[in-house]
Image 1: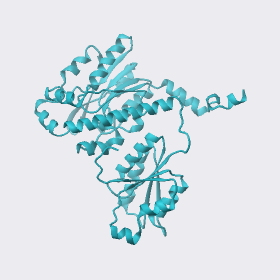
Image 2: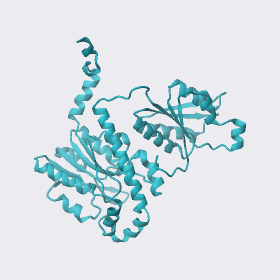
Image 3: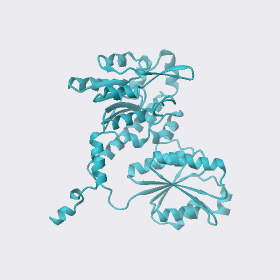
Image 4: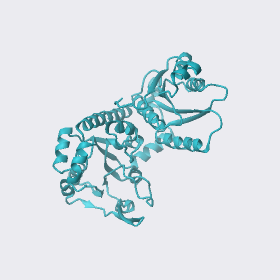
Length: 382
């Protein structure tokens, strides 16, 4: 009996764990519909499922739907109750936004909110729509929402490498991981192009431009592959968490080394993707020499905010009498790091001969640590 009581499944829960469970019971449920590109049918499927819920007696309302002129999508709203949008005046323009407080006053069981990555008008209660959704979930209202894979924060650089399009609106991976259910809405790239040519995705004057850019067949195949992989990873992660399956052996800990360059955020995202798959801790390290300029201090502040979005820890160290490589080695040993991510060295071959290679130094002075060098111009999916 004693052995049974000592087993982690039978241990007494802490007050914090009990409070968290109580909060989760009161919190609304989040269902996400994710697709590889606009036009795969996420909103249509979401509305279709909403009608099925209404038939079962569930109180469902439409909080915000963006039909993009698609008649099939508009028609699918049917007799669902629609919460009127809030009219907002900003910089002389009249804009229609999600009426968050109207939804709270109505208190439906489930609300449909499209365009999860949308950035709200600056005068709104929250900066981003996913923050509106989080607010509603905390109010005990369940939400059905939709997004495309390019809006997932951690794949920002991969999407740019595929499409050469910089996506400015993103949703943090940590928010996506809070979803109680994720549904992949998928069609083949060929079928998606057919829909585009038939005018079912965008207006006629945009079709040819889209076919020559974002909707090129090669792009759609790569985005679809990326979507299938990312959704599978999210679902697998939920299964592991639900069954309390832990990683046996050593605990992975990833260290990402960043400097003042455009590749810093790219390295952080790549590190997060690795950490997320391995269920590992993520550490960020910046090593500086000499006095920091105001611009550099501001950059570090931005990194810290960026790190918080990924639940990563930022370590800032000054290389006084040591070389940067020695600082990296010390931090790696101190935090028991198992993998290190570095950007491609900016040193010339002659500088590496005179000053030494940072990678070679780390390899010589550490054991059982994997080192990854991330190219500045990587074009392939990891």
